[in-house]
Image (cartoon, rainbow over all chains, first blue to last red):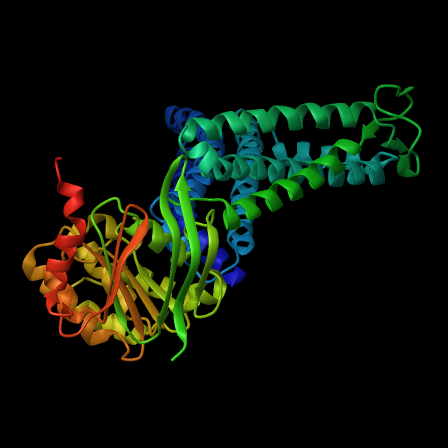
Length: 272
Length: 236
């Protein structure tokens, strides 16, 4: 059933976010065209439009994630969602997985657009971008610690994934708790208050754990090494110190928030 | 016959307001139950509990011997008062959606009924009139071969001709051995189809009677209803 839920969730959410990605694709098409026909003002306008779209796409995706979750569970469509013969955990998982994919896609597309615009602008002013990229790659490959860079990239990716997961968990938890008996009278304001309260507490705890707990990854000539004796705050230099307790906490907290949300959906939520 | 709905000491409150008090009942399968009462008496709350939309209650509720959950939802076809389909959907999408999740959904019958109901397969729901949306939802419910049908005010807000049409669709399409719970306050139109009349008010069961030929004893259901609920309109 989870597969069917995910399939239908993609169909539903695609209607909310498709328009912005379509706009980005059209703008890119115009940019490429203007490059070949050498019309500068179209090129400039489409470049600015694309940069704006890249920022707006993240915002629109985020709004779509929130509104889809609310509408399909706690709006009128909740009458359909909550009467499907599926576990509340499956319902939640399908929404979380699809939201995660959309948010990640919006980040990747935004980064890709900015890199693309940089390369495009370089080409427009006559720089040989291909040569520049090759030189950059040669420089990276020539570095003695290529392995460390790769490991760092993996760690950063994991951190981004964890951040997205926590963010989705916080949103879902706030919207769900706001639809229980205790908070329903207050309305959607309660969802905002709950979200910011949880968000701030999570940020502070993650920051403190990352900085002060002496469980860190330290860069060295043999790659990243795990240490239990040095925190980020008492880093002595000589290598990059990366506290990882915050990351572990985020993963556990996201799992905890999803579990509580699933419990609330099953036992406490009132569909209006 | 086994029980299709069993409720024991069900209580539900909204804040300090108790909507259902010590509700207990037991219905065997295969009957049409009229859930009757004035507006705000708790009919929809009871239905939401039976369908798993409200979970914070006390007492025991069993559908076909199971608490509201995956099993009960797989055998219950529910028609709510609200339009619950997503705006972007078209009838053909709604049919695929139902077929995805309900093993007892008859897609071929649904496609056939779209034509009978004069509903365009590919018209977006958001561009449909309220009447068309209600027809589509009714179609999606009657195209299931469910054990229990829960219909919340299926006749509310529609003209007399539409009421006849809706009742006709319900009676012609539901499996013979299924059970039906219909909430309504338009008793006159439906009293002839009931096997049981359950009247609730002030959070309690006020009457729970067998019906024969649209009558409870020698009174029509509507007369009994007027007698039972006259308090609601008394000024003194």
